[in-house]
Image 1 (cartoon, rainbow, N blue to C red):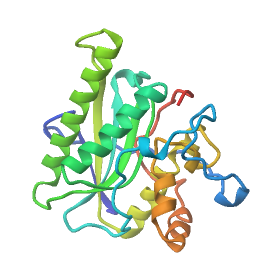
Image 2 (cartoon, helix red, strand yellow; image 1 turned 45 degrees about the vertical axis):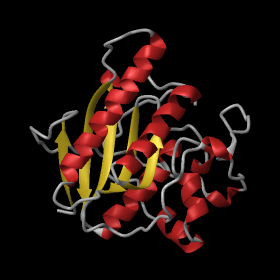
Image 3 (cartoon, helix red, strand yellow; image 1 turned 180 degrees about the vertical axis):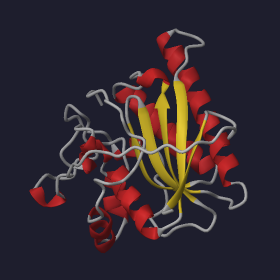
Image 4 (cartoon, rainbow, N blue to C red; image 1 turned 135 degrees about the horizontal axis):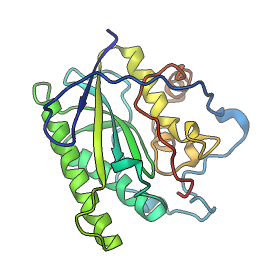
Length: 237
């Protein structure tokens, strides 16, 4: 097998089954099409100050971690668009980055949408990687659900459903999934070039990585990548 794939419910890693999803073909717009990077622009063109964003992670390494490298997807209950719009997306995006830092997870790619998110990251501990992931996502989902329910005035509303994690064990599979997550806003039809979407890692990646690294990652084929990603996202961001 190219990778080990598991499915866990929201908190404890109890029942594990195989899940696979073959995506349709798509092609991300090239960075060479003349569209200027606009990661500091909102959906309506307003400038988002760079100081708004939380501390970005380290420069990307693009190497598999001995402690464990995972791609993770989590979805809202019934795929509802609980995080529609800039305010909610910003909160979820920032909480993901902050909690990853708090739990010493090293994120390499991420993409956040109205009803789901993906990230690729390195576990801090080889023996405890899966438990660390469950603990981190449990806290993330609890905090973001409480914030959202307070905002909406609906205490106790179910916000999150499940998360899926895949441990990546081959370098090529890892690089393809990095590209997939960086380019995910294009796949969902939100932008033509991924770095225009502020709630993903593409702009950070292009700033932080060497040009040769960017070319290598973006050259990876992603139309055959198997990721749980059967979601229609809200267009407001």
